[in-house]
Image (cartoon, rainbow over all chains, first blue to last red; front, side, top):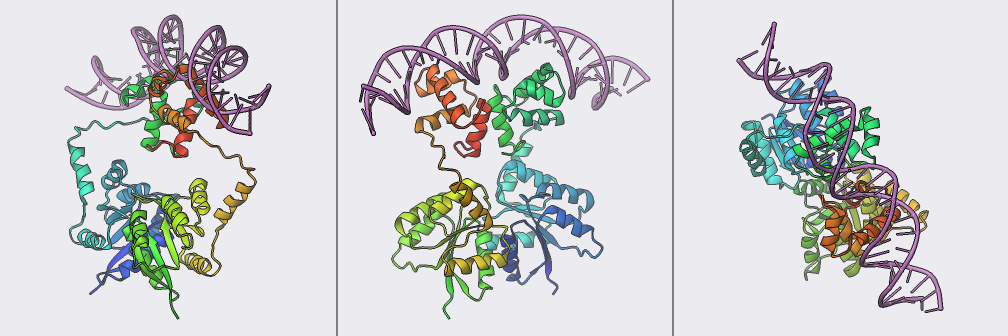
Length: 213
Length: 213
DNA sequence: GCAAAAAAGGGGGTTTTTCCCCTTGTGTAG
DNA sequence: CTACACAAGGGGAAAAACCCCCTTTTTTGC
């Protein structure tokens, strides 16, 4: 019987190499490659001699090209490749981004090896594996009546500058706009995000990873 | 030849179990136990039938009782146990906290298995293993001429409130102080932390984990 | 294809908050 | 005795926040 081929994309070498050993103890699977970030992985996919794995284990937090970017790229270029996301992040936003970009499942790294193996088998056989946490999020996404907040590029730019010690005047200069326009951006965002002060905006930005500190 | 006994404390089951396999491929070592947080580990240490490992691999980010707390407990109760910290965090504060509390080394999880094995051997033989990143921090700690910033309890209280949408007047009410006293706290902190605005204070607080978001 | 709507940029003016400097009283530890 | 942290306050300038208003372009809905 031919083994199911697994590929690992994770920047934590200690983890990916160790995980290889764990997988090698499962008789149904074998690891056919591992990469330390999305860039290395996508480059490999583009190579001539690339042999498709059955499942890709994709980490979310990676340098250079992270899991979400990689997922987007795969959606565009190789939507047939099956990805099981593997991460420590359990926040809704990250999980939903991975799922909506085509990940077939999302496992936390504190999953026990038995469940992990089950997930691999399900992804291979049924095509997906959704844990309770993921399906929970999917359900209340449906009940949310599509009220998701979309920030425009220019707004994001403004938010990033608002998360510094700059005054609004300085921000205006930085964005080549009149301070009055900046005034408008602020008012708009305060209303849209239900905030009252710039402090709130900063907290919102950090919470939603618009800026990283 | 008797093998060197390794104990793993990490909440990421997938990682700790996988790491066990990796270690089992090293002929000099064997894993003699693993725990999913500091509490489980310290309980085990207290147990009658506890057999001391030669090296403890300790994760920093864990629920219930994290690496730093565990390190403090070990320093108090079992300073003879050798700990090699293993984490994804590479910020100076975390690393220094682990080292000053007695960790014999601090490895990042993106270390390659070869270096990892070297580190284990060095900790066992020489008693410590400091990577460049750690010794770098140690050196500029020495050059810092002990100017570390100590925040008083009341100041921390103020900072926490400053990281909300409250006005200074509301903060004053919350702390049962005059707004003018609050003014003093702010001025003091701005000078002490080299900040100019409340935004800066918020960013500082988040960066130094005074508040969590 | 055209109107309506939404997005992007700007203006004037007011109130509130923030920020900064400087002073005063009060315990208290050296 | 005095230096020092802590609490409180005054005055004033500068930002920030909050109003209502305007034009122009781009997008979108029949």
